[in-house]
Image 1 (cartoon, protein in one colour):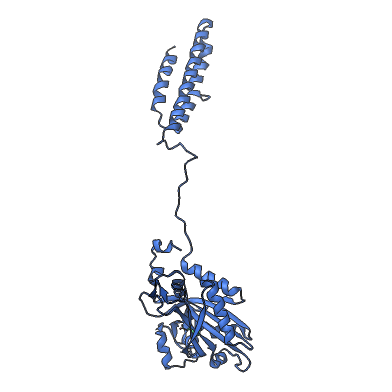
Image 2 (cartoon, helix red, strand yellow):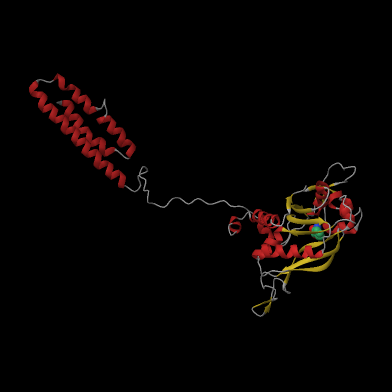
Length: 346
Ligand code: PHE
């Protein structure tokens, strides 16, 4: 009977010490398992005399019942304790993890690609580390031509190419024009070239690396109306139906005639007025988008295309700039600051 008493006494102690469901399950096996303490007691039945056997059996069963009762109430207690690690409340709201998303420039690159894809333009990208030839000579800007200064180019310290000259960080996506003419061979050409471009400026509206998208369309009988129609289509698709494009005479070496494109100011909607005051963003109702024009015959010749048969137009716009105009962002350095509070707004 000694065993019975000591086991009966230890049950209470053992159960009180249990801190979680795992320990409780270990204790359950210790007592109720096949080789558990209670079965060990039962195995001793056969050593008892007929009289003793009856009371012994009853005592062991009582211990077992008592243990099971304590086990169940302990389990209940553990399950309702709030700080118990094992307890899972399936009705609680789940943990919220921060969501990643595409950078606003990537989003714009995709958006612009889709807009031009719809009118059969093929998206390409050409080298950012480029030869002088493709950035300048092929675009009607011979060596020593003053127009090169406009592009404030960074040269790379690398051996010169015999034909194509020095290596540089391309200052504009126009360097893809002649490469595309060579790739396609015989027009029609409908290209949208999106790439990183470089000019050493750093202020609220310039970063030394920025993105441009360049459109190029060459075919027979292409004229300015096709250019204007495409620009109107683009500005409406990208900025909204109430936005228009206009052409203002300008000069580029690689287009003739050349223009700058303006679009209706997205802030004052072209009225030049905000609350009866002159619009501070545009002052005139128009915002400048970028350069465009009819491809210069010399550029077609560089591209091995006969200017007597074919004509075309090209434009080059800054991606950061169109995003800025669309959302009214006033400092383009935000794009590259990596500040998640800024990026999360898009
Ligand atoms: N490459 C010019 C620039 O970066 C823009 C442009 C492209 C102008 C195509 C005319 C035609 O300023």
